Length: 157
Image 1: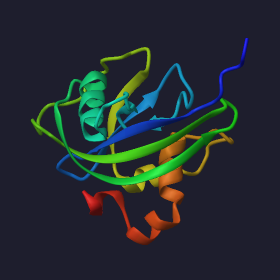
Image 2: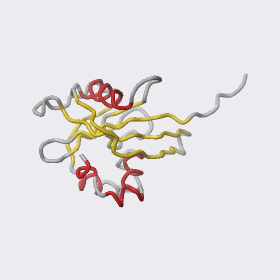
Image 3: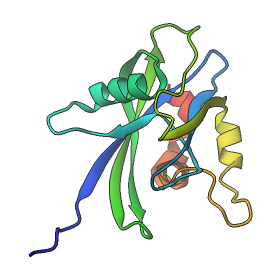
Image 4: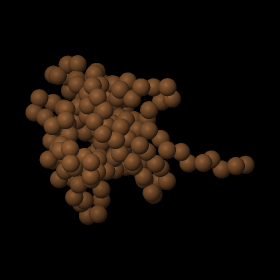
């Protein structure tokens, strides 16, 4: 029996800000990157538009209806230990109802949702006792040389 070749998958991350410019992040659970902060998102399905994916994944994970507006950046994410490789597309999204708050819709995949500023997320780049606190695609985004030249996530929303 032939072994299956590894494939590069496409992930989509929804960047949703509140009125204060804080972004929605959740604590990953039950998969690679468990225990790290992530944006709502997931795998792009065959034939799916990446903007539709951001809207679908956000609704499935948080119960929030959003309008995906534009792609902001992408990262090349190699999870060595897990032998996984992703290209992650970061998409800016706007909530349909700015008053509605996220709910953990998939408790097996996410521990909780919270709003964090970009500065707070950047502080999490510093590992605690060697443990990574941000999901690898966010780390790679903040470390990307082109992104560093561009500025910040909130400035581009």
